[in-house]
Image (cartoon, rainbow, N blue to C red; front, side, top):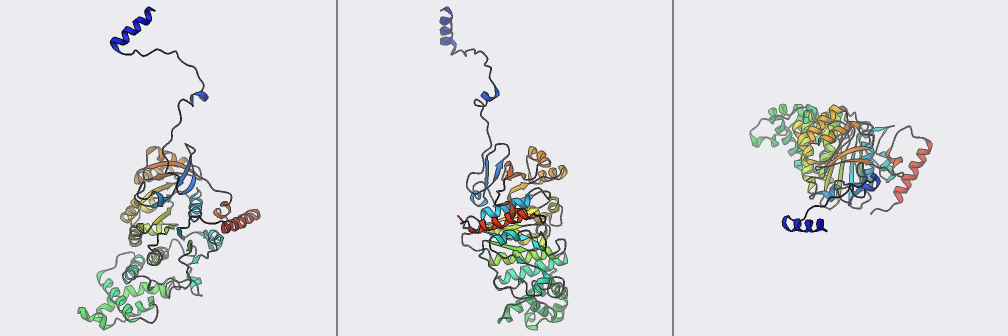
Length: 448
C-alpha cells in the first residue's frame, strides 16, 4: 500500500516511471514473430519475371518499359560476366517472356553459334521465323544483302553510314578532302540514278571518275577530287570485290519481314575478330534505325551479342550512341552483352564507351574474377558488398543494379524454356524430343 502511494506521488511530481520487467526466455522460432525480417523494396510486379531475390526469396520482376521515367532514366541494359555463368540463358528467356506481350518486338545480332548456325536459331525456328544470315559465301549465291544506299535510308543517313564504313576500315577519321570527294560522289549518284536502287558500285565508279558537273561549282579541279577519293574507293571496293563481297553490293534482299516479333541477324559466319564485324554492325545498326524504328507505340528491344564490337570502335559507337538517344523516344531498349568491362573502357573508344555505359541504367553482373570485379565496381559505382560477392557467385546468380536498386537475383528457367535455352551440341536424344515439344508448345500458346 505504501509502495503504491509512493509510486503515485512520484508519477505526479516527475512523470510516469518506467516499470521494471523480468527477462523473458524464448526460442529463435518464437522470436522471429517479434523481430520480423525486412527486405529492400522490389521493382514492382509489372513486367516479366526474372527469378527470385536470393536474400529475401521474393520474386524479381523487371521491365524497362514499365520502369522508364519513374525508376529508370533510360531503358538500356548492360549484361556482364564470364562465359558459362548464365548470360545467354538470361537473354533468351527474357526475350521469350517479353514476346508474350503483343506490343513487343525484338532484334538480335547473334554473333555466336555452332554447327553452322547462330545460337538463336532454335528460338527463331520455334517461333516460325527464318534468321537473316549474313554470310559472304552464301550472299554470292543469292543470300541476304543489305544495301547501304537503300532508298528507305535518308540521304544524310546513307552518307553517314558510308563515312563510318570507311573510318572503321581505315582505323582513323576521314580527312576533309576525302570526305568532300565522298560527299560529291554520293550527291551525284543520288541525283542521277533514278530507275533502280543505287549501289556501292555506283559510288566507287564516281569516285574513280568524278563528274565535272558535281564539282565545278566549287572551283575544284576534277583531277584533285579524283586523287582525294582514291583511298575511299579502295576501301569501298572491299565490300564489292573483297572478303566482304556479296553482302552489301546490291539491292536489299526482298522479303525481310521487319514486322515479325523476332528478327535475328545471324552473324556467326563472320570472323568476330576481323574488321568485318564492326563494319557489319554499323551497317545493320543504321539500316535498322531508318527501316525498323517507327512511331507506332511498339516497344522494341535491340539485343547485341559481343557488343564490344560496337562500343570499342569510336566511329561505330558514335552511330549507336545517336541511335540510343533517338530510340528512347520511340520505345527502344538496347541490351549490350559483353564479357569484361575492360574490353570496353580500356579500348580505343573509351570516351564513346563511357557515354553509352551512362545510358545503361540497368546493369547485370555475373561472376567475375576478383580483380575484374573491383574494376567493374569502380566504373559502375557498385556498393562494396556487391563487389565482394561477385567473385563468389554461382552460375545463374547475378548482381542486378537497376538505377541504384541493387539486388542479388537467381535466374529461374522453366522446363518448357530449358530445351530452347541450352543449345549445347552434345544434347541427348531425349533432350531433342524435349526441344521439339517446347517448340510446339511455344507456337501454340497465345500472346498476351
